[in-house]
Image (tube, rainbow, N blue to C red; front, side, top):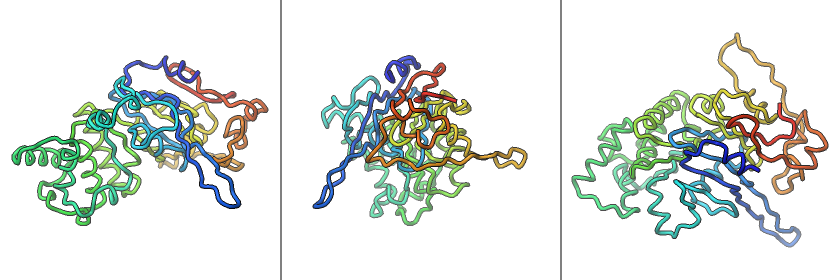
Length: 329
């Protein structure tokens, strides 16, 4: 049913994810049995070409695992990822490595994303070495200067080491490295989470300018709702490994009760626009022992016996608006 609903979305998608699942097992011991949990559970979504698709949810809902699955940095337990109509699972390792030129990732922590033993020059030239792209001395300098200037850094920084740069400068280096091989798709895993607010604005401004200049497509993982509403064209809401709602626009009204509560927790810095927030009650289920119906039922004010018995499927609520809820608001 989720696939049928997704098929009704615009067909010009760079990435299509279908029933993607990643399961982890705990190690058993003398007095314990092996348990399993699904960090990502039958996720289906599309990433339209040239757009920014945001993924939001509480910590531990599976956002970062989904990001790595989409790029096949980790293998899924089930499901598939189509990139430009190519099933990533069907590719041999050499083919997948070649395709990675078109799909790159910017990581959350700029402090650990760059090898501290590398100069910025070596860090930016490393993608070419890994991909076996031979560059002459002059071409290396041209590529290096182009990448550095593209992200707003001084050419003098190419001989610096990561510890000599600020967090914002490191993240710019991470973005430059992701752009080295001219990709069409970037996965941004909370790229501003560890930065000061003023630096966050600069990085988002840079990403926005690069998207317009290079025609990039973004999958933007974040827990910052104000940032997602500002930056993203579509919003995917996850809860305990599943997609519970896909909003067709950043200003669309949420219908799933969890998504609505999540969106209502975003405040506007204006005393004339005060909000009365109703906190959620109840405990989050254990991911190792999910209930048979809706995982949000015990915390949902609209839950019914049907919700506790039968899991709602992701289906179309309005054009491009998908909701997994028996009683949408």
